[in-house]
Image (cartoon, rainbow, N blue to C red; front, side, top):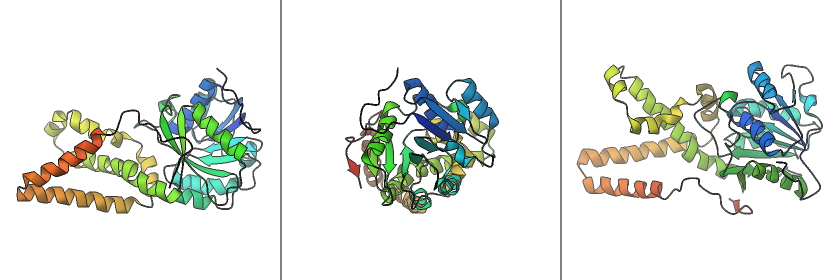
Length: 304
């Protein structure tokens, strides 16, 4: 079903996607499913992913990422989504500084380094969909990945995009089921370090702790609790190495997590059941208060 472009003068009909991993691949599938754009141009370092997205009908044209005219091949796009890991995105974004593209955006889970890389680019909007899974690559892409998810958008002081272009960008996100919320890049990175980067790090650490025992019986005994807690440790090591080394607030989050573990260790060592229970009760109540299918605040709200 074609999604109407009824608000404003600017319309996103020609779109580019660089990177066909979980997010980029899901974006291509979602946009074709809702019929929002007329033409999708893609590029990826993996030729199999490029072939698959074309064969599946989720893209119309592919650009050779190694070709000399790679960047100019996206000229004329109404929007370009750069869906690659943070370090690579920081290197690639400035190369589109003089490109004739309506809106340039990214999808990385760190925003301060990205916004620094895009400094002076008036047509850049930082983006981060709060969506994902332990799956990776185009094979894991899901057209429904963005449904009922918050999609953080960051605009820097250099952004000169007129209102109609920003609104067109938001309508595209809403068409795939996401809920765009504006947020300051620094505030975003502080929050994401706690609710995304630290959980992945903790899951990797717990999985490594079990693996380091070299205990086959322990492995056979693993049940739901361990599997639930470490599910995201099955995520791509390459991607998460890039993300974790790009996260500007992660070391502070690690220190706070260690502090919480040290408090728990102290309660247990001291046999202080009352203090332990109070700690656990507070954490349990917080977790229980988080609804499934968490909804975003009002669309117009800006989170500082």
